[in-house]
Structure formats: structure tokens, C-alpha cells
Image 1 (cartoon, rainbow, N blue to C red):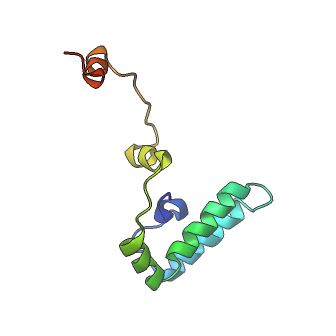
Image 2: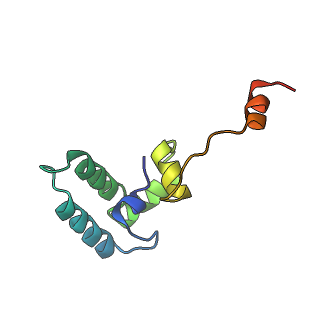
Length: 96
């Protein structure tokens, strides 16, 4: 699952009111009629961290593996993959 804090654009220490305001703003930006996938991801993110108890449960028990999107967005928004060097390919293939 992509980080719900990142989806809603809030800090890890955000209060319930801040998270709710961010949720409502995100829903207004992408209603289900226009972008169903984004709407579902925003809704799921909000449900995961909507109150203190759920934020604590998310922090303690969310053991879902990061997706490629998680990894790339964690690196930076301007990440551009580079082709591997010949030396690295030889290392991966076990050539000496």
C-alpha cells in the first residue's frame, strides 16, 4: 500500500481535523466520476489513518510490502532509472 500520509499530503503528526480536511480536499479534486482509482486510494488512505487509534494500528500492524510506486516516490519525484553498467551486469550474471 502506498503511504496514506503521502496520499493525503499530511505530516505523520497531523491531527484528526487536519487529516479530515486533507481528505475532503483530495475528494473534491478527484471525485469518483472523474478518477475512480484516485478516489479509491484517497478513501482507503483516509480509512487507514482517520483517527488516533487507526493511526496507531497502521503504524504497528501494517506489514504490506512496498510497491514500485512507493519506492520511486520515496526516492524522489524526478527519479529516472539508469541502465546498468557492463560491470554490474557481469556481477549479476556471476561472471568473473
